[in-house]
Length: 146
Image 1 (cartoon, rainbow, N blue to C red):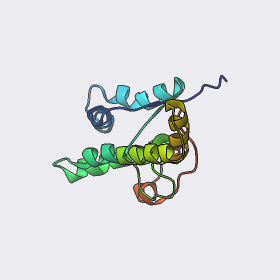
Image 2: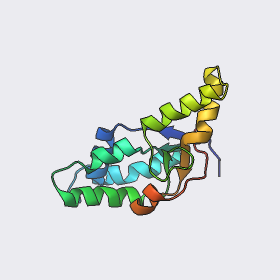
Image 3: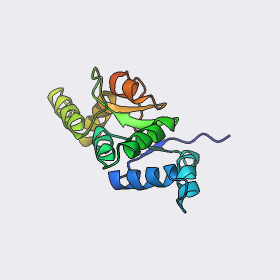
Image 4: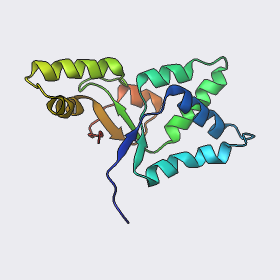
């Protein structure tokens, strides 16, 4: 088995929605392709990234059953990349990246490379998917940005 360095893939929310909706709709002509996409990504060393902003937008649908099905699909994925500030108990978003950049600058980082390395320690996670209640309240400990 060849080991690959994982790369994070950050789909737009519209891509997440199309992917999930096709995967969870039995009659979808693209259903099997959508259900196989996750494994194809992993086989290529790519891990999908989910942020709080993605989750918020995925839940804004007219049908609560669809929102629940989308969350269930996300929970079924064995590994996701995500972020949050160290010490926080919720899924993070762009505000966390901005905060990490401010902390990095304040701690003496002056180059982009220094800032990126420091921000990585603060924000990025890559772990097995958790139930939503644990994902928004659990702890993330693995560094996941490549």
